Length: 284
Length: 215
Image (cartoon, rainbow over all chains, first blue to last red; front, side, top):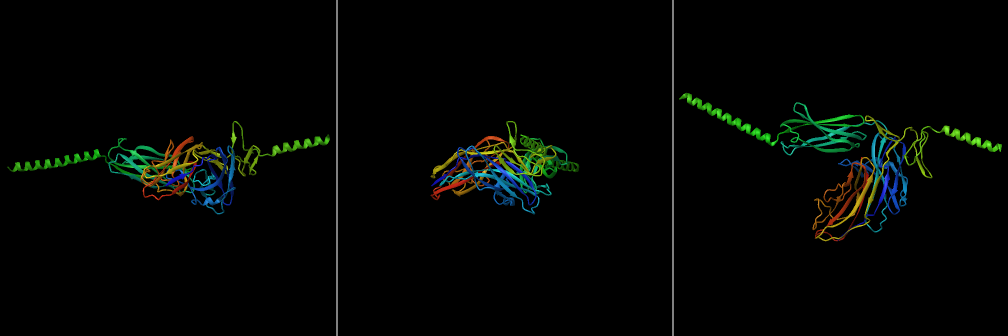
């Protein structure tokens, strides 16, 4: 049994790394990607067009057939030969169809060398530029808290873990900055800490953000607390807020409560017996 | 002689009038040792054009230069094609990897180095773009172990994102950075192991590595 694969030594650059196009329905735009062949031999490149979604870590993930705008893009050439050390230009024509509703679409435009390793199996390389197409019209920014939960292994866990999921329900991408605030049961702020800063969330994407608050390290007293997440987002400077309650009962507090309870019970028994003894003594 | 002077005068008048008629905000793609204008605009029309040492990418109907700017409250994305003038370079070191003939007593492995450079302020992400071909069963327990049919990849490097041995699948993030970086090298080690029950044969794959800037 053998396993063989070939990794052609590709080396090339593309530029720019990011585009933003604003266009009307029924309009046509053209973008270009500059290719620089830094390989020691001539390369032939072919254009690639992908839809883009946002991965769990916030990174772009390129896939086919996930955005209708993939069909709007037509490369102007099937292949482009670039000699070693030289530069070339790959152009893409973008036709925004008539009647398309306003909002953002996310694509990856790029190139990959044509694998000329005949008879071999290869690992190919691909470089992609992020393209945001904003179809003109009314844009709205809506960020929602999809989930905000306290992940508690036990009630007295000194390190509070939280699971936060935000979803961009608007039709454009937003930058978001979030912080978590801890308040006591009366609503007085005790501490605040950042969760994330300037995180870009594209339209339709979710951002999962787990964070923790070290209750023991911050010297919290046992009791009921409120944890409030506040996320500011977008050019419209909106905020979304979510609040949950957390009981903090560390082991030592349960031990203290237990001891106090035993003392209380003991005291009651002692006083009851003493009362009984007094009654008996009084009868005698 | 008089005719020649008239022609000269006519040419001079045309040049002067032509200069005066040019839009004040006409820009041109050009560079020198001190600056580089990557993309530009002209209010009265636009087209891709080339001529000698220069290329001109122009657009119609706008008067401000392209690019992003903000004052903390508002962000302006000037131009119909706002862009980050940046680059990303991908380099794969080895042309050929072979895991050789596998046996049940050892783990076959081979490595290549993927090096990424970019000046994108958001850094980069290197991931598996697509996978095709035939391979052994994907590793699922985090480690390719001799005697068990498993196949996967591990990574090493400052920006490596692969923890242990992971199955090679689309969207698997191999390396990433959140800042611009020059020469970010990640060693990718492909590993395979077989069991006594594995089907004998020749296995092969095409793995496409995809590099892009982060959002």
